[in-house]
Image 1 (cartoon, rainbow, N blue to C red):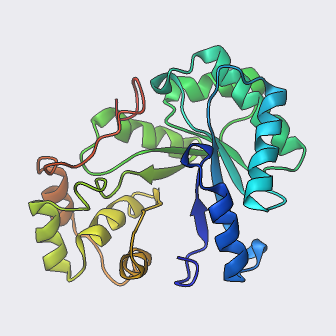
Image 2: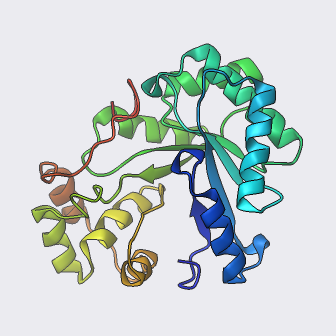
Length: 249
């Protein structure tokens, strides 16, 4: 990924790969200041704001980096996290940012009400909300994206390519890809980018990594959008259901 020119690394405490990521960064020779590293805090009922800061410290040690560009609270009610715990986690990230351990803080899998609650209680609004986003999310998710953007909250999409059982397959996607002379994955990623939503696709080969980074040089037409959004969700396309309500519930 780094050898192909990629510079945004998205990981999480849940993934258990921080040490491997840190090793890959060191071996790549890419300067730290040229990278953007995002990780996500694993919600735990035992966590307090102080323990969140220590958890961030552990992630920094595992990644062999003095700071993170972005740290997210990984989930809210859809992950079994109640409001009070969500607030503790958020306060911990606010403190980690104050201490210079994290440059930006945000959330994942949070709906509008959850974001408004955290902001009202701390005076600090998340800069990012990472959510499931693709042409087949429900209307409430599209509404959440527009609301976030209206508040200056950047939206990052995960689940863009349907998971390992689907891998961007689908008749409508394939039809648009053929028309534009690109891959299915490029169509789905471009769909999100054209709406101002960032993407973080996974890939298992150098070819696919390079393909996912080539998202310029073609445009999706209004007809393409109708084809994608008007089709049924492809078979085996994974839905994550990481919000209880308000974002791809």
